Image 1 (cartoon, rainbow, N blue to C red):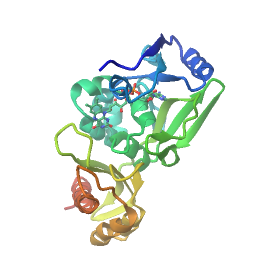
Image 2 (image 1 turned 135 degrees about the horizontal axis):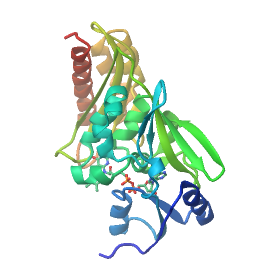
Image 3 (image 1 turned 90 degrees about the vertical axis):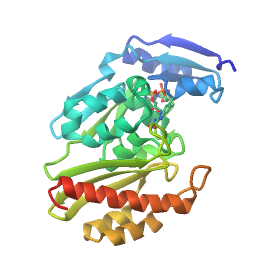
Length: 284
Ligand SMILES: Cc1cc2nc3c(=O)[nH]c(=O)nc-3n(C[C@H](O)[C@H](O)[C@H](O)COP(=O)(O)OP(=O)(O)OC[C@H]3O[C@@H](n4cnc5c(N)ncnc54)[C@H](O)[C@@H]3O)c2cc1C
């Protein structure tokens, strides 16, 4: 099979890329790591398009300290999330999630912005953004806006980005001293997209969990916040939290797993995540 025909243009500035995106009026796509886009072109799952290559735009790469937040540029590779000390100390869930993405070769090319814009429901990083209450910084030729992660993911492979906007960066609140972050997933083979995955963030003091956020991935069109389970955890009742998942989640059945099995796995992951958060917080 031959790949879909594409036009190719390499941008030499963010402004030029945004100008080209606006002029194309929907007939162009940004090319970041290419790990999802090129695969879909090769398989002819994507229509003819014009690619605006943003790989030369180094100002979109890297992690910086912004006081109570860290800023991660859209072109930051998954491999950098794995290894950057500032990510490990301020938003460790991103480092843990990055290791779970595909394989090393893919992680050296794939980018944070590409993963969020692609919005695969089984991807790890979108759920991290929701659990950690990150803002997605979207930029167009004449505007810049911050979109809370919870409202950024709108549906299956759909986001709140307008046709002429790119993700410039994300801003993630820094973890406090009591905060523990855990990312767990179950996949049939190492490197596969997850059947079920979870990101837990909570302040842990003794046995108690406060300010907890639980975002599941692989269980719906977008990352799902398990609000009933979050309330039950705040009340210190893990069994009630697991029971609440039946109302919080509406998992799909597919070739890989039935809805009932996915719900069971969601409970298993929650128990494991809470046990780990408590252990890391000094309690067993
Ligand atoms: C075999 C295989 C296994 C994989 N397994 C996983 C996995 O387990 N978990 C996982 O999360 N991912 C997985 N991936 C996908 C991988 O993580 C991709 O890197 C990621 O989804 C997309 O990032 P990218 O930089 O490659 O984006 P690209 O493929 O370049 O682009 C993807 C989409 O995002 C748009 N885009 C890119 N950058 C921006 C931006 N800054 N602003 C707006 N739009 C933008 C593009 O126009 C395109 O529509 C896998 C990929 C492969 C090939």
